[in-house]
Length: 227
Image 1 (cartoon, rainbow, N blue to C red):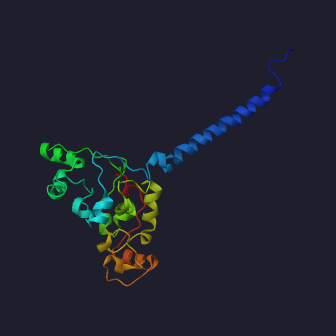
Image 2 (cartoon, rainbow, N blue to C red):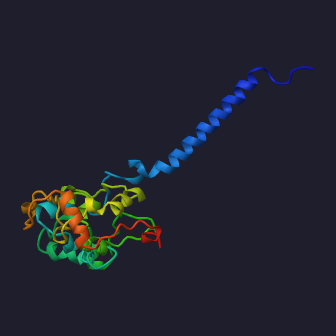
Image 3 (cartoon, rainbow, N blue to C red):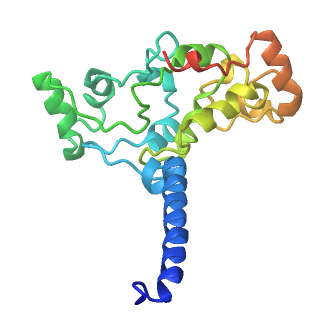
């Protein structure tokens, strides 16, 4: 009987099986790690805005506290995007005719909000409450990075689940005194730099004390964030 398949068919079939397994493995790896890639999660990518607001200028240069603009952050789940009337509180006097700020003035005149591009945008299936984190001594810097060094805003953390769990499992590594939650560059070993009266301590020393004082729980059950 004539041979239907050539001898190379066995080699090709084995190679196709190996190639298929490698392809499936590569696809699975890509799906499970995609949110760690900077070109997917936009870490360190400056977000363009209709008005190029500089946190570096306002925070580091002028000393504006986070809560001056994000007024609801201590009492609400959302930090809140400041309305243009907050901007105009200063810019009706300072740089009041600057062309760069015309979108702000136009929004104020017409009462049409500016469509800011979200920098830190969690999925709809994730619940995050700003107020409870601040009340438990988690600083703005821990999630948003050194905004006082950002001429334009960008993400410094992926905001994926493993990143959140790193803090939830070990809150003592991140907690700080409540009166320092908006401080940029807080250093427990040099508290005098931030006007704190606490004695110098390492994070390993101050962290467990604050966890106990603030009654912080290590919450890692799913319903904490997924409701």
